Length: 85
Image (cartoon, rainbow, N blue to C red):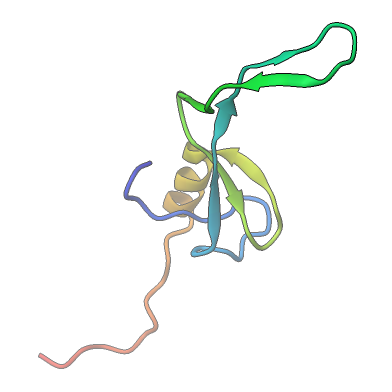
């Protein structure tokens, strides 16, 4: 994941609350007659080309660049207060 600001392109209100969605693969063996699970392997993370990000406000999910590009198009404005020199 990149260390850049995000902005939800869907609800256009969230800049701070997000999930990163990851995928795992887990192999298992089943008995052909009973259907009972006989063996599970440990889960292995599936490498993603680009992280999938989910907004925790509206639940919109998309690739990371959508959130980054939206933040670049609509940068956060400062509060208007100026720091003393």
